[in-house]
Length: 293
Figure 1 (cartoon, rainbow, N blue to C red):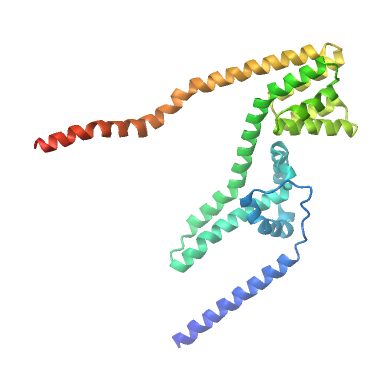
Figure 2 (figure 1 turned 45 degrees about the horizontal axis):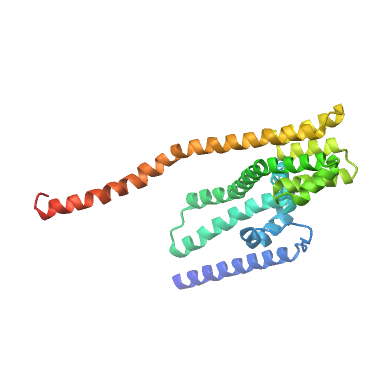
């Protein structure tokens, strides 16, 4: 009798699993193909999860709150990940990351009969926030590169304007000669906006709004004010370049002064104990040899 009940349960589990797999396969076939010809390439880890992300985006994204999608859209525009995926796809990435982590912990737990549901739920919740951490790291890296490259581009703009170019020609020269990075892409965006019919002042203000950085905002306001007032644009750019170079050196000096404070923790926790062990070992061995310990 027990064998019959066990066999029935096993057959039922297999049938449910087969029905689930068939349903998922049918739903996956309904997901349309994606044309990524005009999209940035995906990171390797995200590319591995992308089929599941597209599945979740196609079938579940309609239930995502509009407020969340609006906030995610702003973050994607700020980090330029919007050229890689849409806001609904990013939220689907968070859901997919959580599902994969939960299943990766559930399957071994079922095989070993040691399933702890609270831990799995906690791990899934942490995995859902990992894409947000990745997005924050991208934003921090872009801000560092923007601050690093801004004095270089301001110097290029100053030289181009002093050579006789207008601000649009100077921007094209700076984009062509400047170092690649987020600031180069921002100036390219400004040039595209100007070619599409947007005024130069509005294009620069849009760049300041996208980057959300005080230094970029000051540069855009100074250029717009110089054009409106008819003052010397080259002199304004030269002043901005010198100011940004000074602030860059000040940031470097601040980081250099913070380095000794940041080294205290690894010194006390790792280097000092090892040094004391190396110095004390010969003394301890001498005491052991003389029978004093």
